[in-house]
Image 1 (cartoon, rainbow, N blue to C red):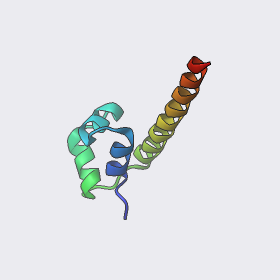
Image 2 (image 1 turned 135 degrees about the horizontal axis):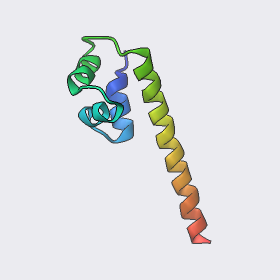
Image 3 (image 1 turned 90 degrees about the horizontal axis):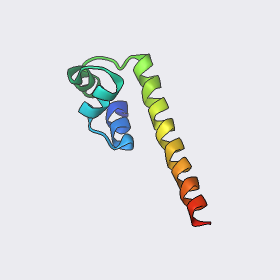
Image 4 (image 1 turned 180 degrees about the vertical axis):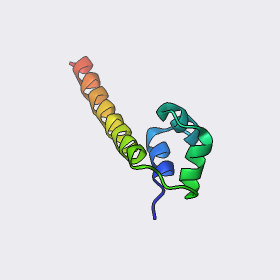
Length: 71
């Protein structure tokens, strides 16, 4: 089974502690989610998905911005 906490933190270039602070949960909660001690709530899973989409969007936006500067 994949670990959505570790996967999300890695894709965002954050530590799990930074990710916890970013979404407003205690780092102990994030650790328990990561270790499977407690289930990751549905709202957090959705938040992780949105954060990964936002990262992709910002990357694409930067590429277009860089291309415009080259013209």
